[in-house]
Amino acid sequence: MFDTPADEGASGGSFLQQLPVILWQRRWFIVLPTVIGLFAAIAAVVLIPPSYRSNAIMLVESPQLPNEVIGLDAGNMIDRRIAAIRQQITARPDLIQLIERHGLYASERKNTPLSEILDEMRSAISLTPAETSTGNGSENRTIAFELAFEYSRPDQTQAVTQDLMDRVLQLDARGNSEQAANTVQFLSDQAAGLEVKISALQLQIADINAQNGSVLAGGGMIVGGSGGSYDVQIAALQRDNQLLIQQRNLAQTSDQRAPVVAAAELRLAEARAVYAETHPDVILAKQALAEAKRLAKDTSEKLPIQSLDEQIAFNNSQIAALRNAKATEQAQLSSRLAAQAKAPLVQQQLGELQQRLAAVNTQYEQVQNRLLSARAGVRAEDEQMSERLSVVEPPVIPDQPNWPNRPLIAAIGVLGGLGVGMLLALAVELFLRPIRDPAALKGLLGAPPLGIIPVIEGQYVRHEGWRRFLPSRARR
Image 1 (cartoon, rainbow, N blue to C red):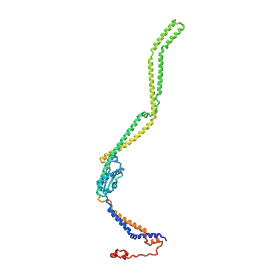
Image 2 (image 1 turned 90 degrees about the horizontal axis):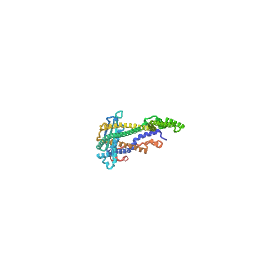
Image 3 (image 1 turned 120 degrees about the horizontal axis):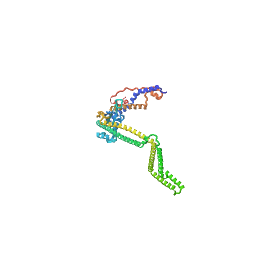
Image 4 (image 1 turned 180 degrees about the vertical axis):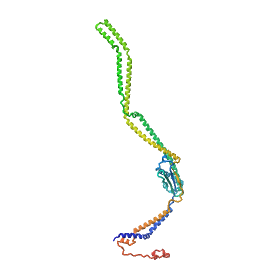
């Protein structure tokens, strides 16, 4: 015989009905943890040292000039600045100085390493930003910072918080000034370096233009030159010299080749062929030949042989000059051909230099704009017109400790002990599994009991005297 769902529901209902009885019978499992939790809460309230918290509220004042003028980055600049300030105020030398100045952690320093004390002090210092938007844009916002310190004594807590606040203001002011000055110096050095690069590139471009001016200027087809005209002129002059030389030679031999001399020689020969040497005709022919030679010689001496020599020498000088001009033109033509051959390389080199110069000029303009903004930021910082921290609420001596929360600790101790006791009582009940009703016996044996014998408890009689301290069985 097995249980039905109705039996299981009855069993669950009987368990809930018997829960008060179970808790009463297991009351010591509940009372003892509750008492222990109560004593633990009392001990915690008494033994835990109080911790006081002093805080200061600082506000980031917006700059009086637009961000574009002073070159501020409204993005993560505040977060980076606060992170840097936190690292500086929690540095080891500053913390040691605060500990020595205010006598902090006097008991801990006797038996605790200094590094652990510094770590504990760092955890006690907090610097948290709180941003409140006042508009749609990023410029319309208010950023406040809370600087807090926790310690066991209220007066020392306030003093340390005051020193930390002064240190934060000092670091912020000095950091802004140093950052602005360093930014100006860096941008000035960068601008000077870019100016040197620009000058060097411009000088390279000028040198290339000077060395390859003919190549870059004469970008067309190269004509073959006038070498043919030189050859024609030289040939003409050489022909003139040949004619002049012939005229000079003819002039030098004209006394023997003149027609008068030839006719006189012919008559002499004819006379000799007919007569003897002593014949008057022969003698007259001889005299006529001598007279003809004398006349031819006088005529040849009157010819301009010197002018012919001067003309020949002049023509020779012209021929030499033409040959030199031809050689010079051939050299220039060869040079232009060689320059034209390397013109694409020169133009490519110039193009690269021009691109580099344009890029450097663009970078130089950007650096100049940033430099102007940085200089405006330095001036604004000097005149206190830039973004800076100001104290809204200075630290005060706390009158109540922020830790421990004694009512909360007491409630946690009592409620925790009570909860643990109830869980322990239920665990014991589930572990022992006592038979408390017929349904449990039926589930254990598989059959219902034949009968139930009730237990009739007697009426409690209050005894007087010493008998009231005896157990209940001994009283009966």
